[in-house]
Length: 247
Image 1 (tube, rainbow, N blue to C red):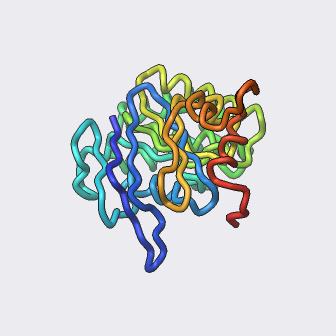
Image 2: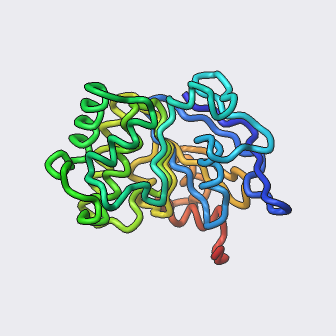
């Protein structure tokens, strides 16, 4: 469904993303992991079309995206790390605004809003202002906004930052439902336990380059010591990327 071929992006002398390639299939969640500054968000931005790669291609179902006006971009939904919500508007009015950006209107928009709010369990709060929502509710509404146009591919950039365990688990349940519907999910996170629970495959990038692309079991086998139990993902991650601070 999604193929990333040799993406490269520089900002002046800084090489943020350097020859990154990976693929993502229908009904699969791919965990994109890396230390701070590794290039995760820049990679997601290029896939979403927010940033233009210096070289390389993003392909959807085998077809390369060809700029901002490419209709194939409608097959991508983005749930950004920073909340993209208007605090003074109600949940429903936020979704009406975002739906209009995809030329949704009338009954089609109402149905899309209803389905998205039901999925994230906010239907009973549709007429409440976002400023009165908890952090977890805002994160779930942020997810709903990315789903309105029924994308085939959903890009989730640290979608559980700052939420309580109940909301985090609700988001996990939402993602399992979306996988079951055949959506292709790209998920960035600093929480290793999330990737362990959710990811069918894991890509680790560091200093802008892919340093691992495998299943959890495959990554664990790389660092396994003879006769010892499998390492958890955090131990694998630190072995691959080192312990030096990246802030």
